[in-house]
Length: 227
Image 1 (cartoon, helix red, strand yellow):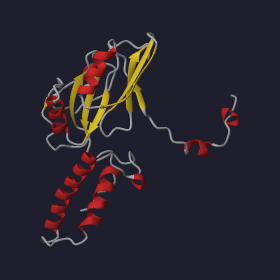
Image 2 (cartoon, rainbow, N blue to C red):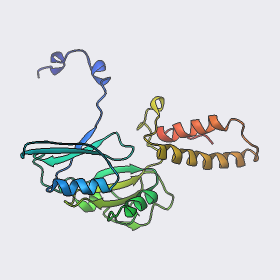
Image 3 (cartoon, rainbow, N blue to C red):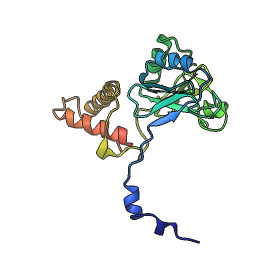
Image 4 (cartoon, helix red, strand yellow):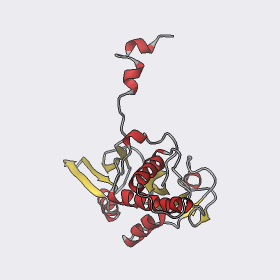
C-alpha cells in the first residue's frame, strides 16, 4: 500500500500542532427572514447579512459566549430545511437559560434528564428516549437538558455543563467564554470553599483566592478538585 505520509509535507508531529477550530455550522432554512427574526429573538448576535443579487443571501449569528457561529440563507446549503438536529448549546445553569428563552418568547420544552443515549439518528435518541421531567437530581454535569426548535424544525438542545470531563480542556489554557460563565464558576467555587472551611474547623482561609483559582481550573479541566 502506498505510504501517504511520504506525500505530506513536514511530519505527523507538526501536523498535530496545527489548530483546527470549529467556527461555523450551516443551518438549512426555508424562509431566511423568518429565521433571522427567530435567531435574533434568541438574543444571538447578528454578524453578517450579505446578498449577491436575487440568487444568494447569507447571514451569520453567534450565540452569547460562543466561539462557534451559525450561517443560513438562500442557496447556502442543499440540505433540507429542518434537517439539522442535535445542535448542542452548552450552558452553566439549565433553568436560568431556559427561563431566559421563555422570557424572549421562545417555545422550549421542560428541563429533563435521561440516563440513556443523547445522540443518534432520530429525535428520540437526540433529545432523550426516556425523559424524566426536572433536572438531574444531583445536577451532575452533562446530565440535564431542554430542547427547542426553530421555525423549520432544526433541533437545538440545551445541556448543562459545569465540570468538564477529564482531557476535554487543557488546564494550561483555562478560559471563560463570558462574564456569566465566570460569575457562575465563582459561585460554585464559593460554595465548595465554604465546605472546605467547615472541614478545616471553620477558620477563615486567608489563601482563598488561590483555592478558588485551583478549584475553577480543575473544574473546567476535569481534573481532581481541591478539598
